[in-house]
Length: 121
Length: 110
Image 1 (cartoon, helix red, strand yellow):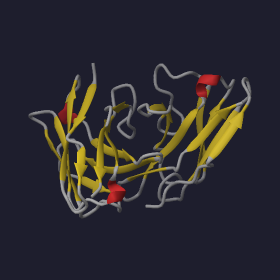
Image 2 (cartoon, rainbow over the protein chains, first blue to last red; image 1 turned 45 degrees about the vertical axis):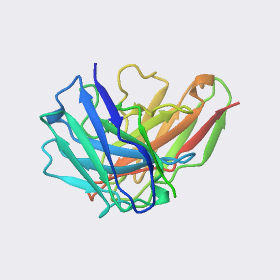
Image 3 (cartoon, chains in turn yellow, brown; image 1 turned 60 degrees about the horizontal axis):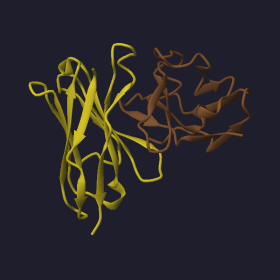
């Protein structure tokens, strides 16, 4: 079945870096745009970034642009989020998400379980 | 990239209908038919309820419907049930090729 599994979360000091991974299975990863979405504790959802299916196009939320990088390895069906210059306000559960054949390419109906990032000294 | 505007909370009694609004601008909600709605229960992963303004994924109850007028999209839930109590979020594609969520709406079933 279609599955996304995030990993790489943890506790990091302000100014530090972390790399999140999202392993995909059950669908042709190389054909799907992929998103990162986060949710701070007790807060709403925030869209973070998107990478096109081939990796040529990447877009970011204003809040992370210049600090975060999104990439993918289609040969390994894995999505990445490199987070640098981390701030306490980056503390959140980070989800990777994409779409399935049952929806459209302009939505996200497949989500991982999330990985928790805590930025604290 | 300002968040879309949703009411912080709405409530209704079982069997009633409620509508949650999601207001943006001509650069997001009003400019594209790419608005989705998610339901999130506490501690759970968001679930897609509506995509492309008014399309319902397979398995989602027909009690959920979506629409759009100008810069405002709406999610309507008819025949409210206790299990509908959750947080609801809208999201829209934008003219910058980015995406923006609404602030979320807490639905209480009285």
